[in-house]
Image 1: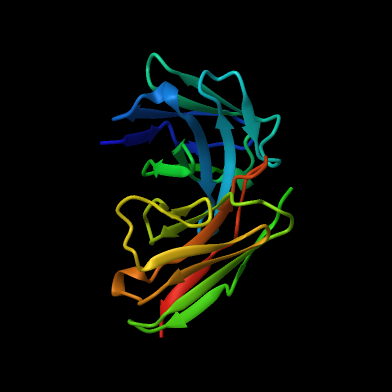
Image 2: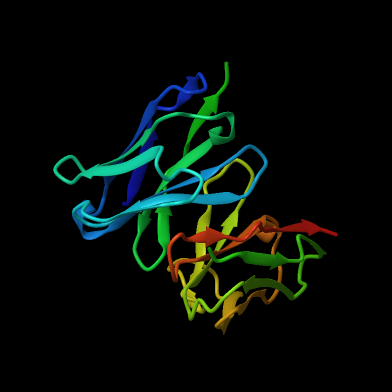
Amino acid sequence: EVQLVESGGGLVQPGRSMKLSCAASGFTFSDYYMAWVRQAPKKGLEWVASISYEGSSTYYGDSVKGRFTISRDNAKSTLYLQMNSLRSEDTATYYCARHGAALDYWGQGVMVTVSS
Amino acid sequence: DIQMTQSPSVLSASVGDRVTLNCKASQNINKYLNWYQQKLGEAPKLLIYNTNNLQTGIPSRFSGSGSGTDFTLTISSLQPEDFATYFCFQHNSWPYTFGAGTKLELK
């Protein structure tokens, strides 16, 4: 059974950093691109970033480019999102997703609140 | 960036109705359009990928069509569990983008 479990969220002050993790199981992690998608409270979905199989290629949404870094550790089957210079508008539930022909499996999400 | 426009934003319907949700891309995205269903407090669920491919385990009352810039999701006979919000998503070119969603509510 495919499982994606996010962790690392919580309350953080504007301008600070936070790192999210996503532990994957039930599939060969290195065979898939992976992605982060977020959803602000009562808002729609926003694709944040994707990463290739070995991590050599990364892609970002305009709103996070230069502040967020997606990475992965295939030995640990874990996806990461390093978030720097956080802003109030980054407040959202962050989902990790497996990236095959589609974002086909999603984690349950982790909440990040940016507030002083 | 490619903009995805969904219509209507809210759709009121009854159990048993046939409904069509629309998604329009600001430029050609070929077949690379997915549909997701999201219920309150849950993660999105993939329904249709690459325009018209039904994800494993999804009921056959869901179908997708379209090409280029105009796409539709059809639910042939609404069931009580189908009332939710539906999002389209393009993965033809970076940055990938979602539509704003269509909320399907009980009339």
